[in-house]
Length: 79
Image (cartoon, rainbow, N blue to C red):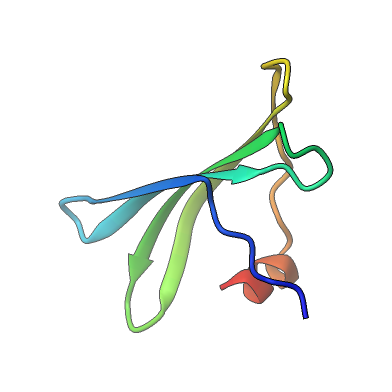
């Protein structure tokens, strides 16, 4: 069984309307020197709902690109 990957860094801030703004920096899967930056706006109403999300990929040379939105099936597996 593989161990669960943990972010290199994460921070969360509760906003005035009960939403949470989350930022996480994950190691790259194929290149350990690369990183994935994930920013999410979420709300807890008995269960977590993601209101908005953006993910960026940073190569080891510092080039950034936006990642495509994950499909609902991929999202459900990670939450």
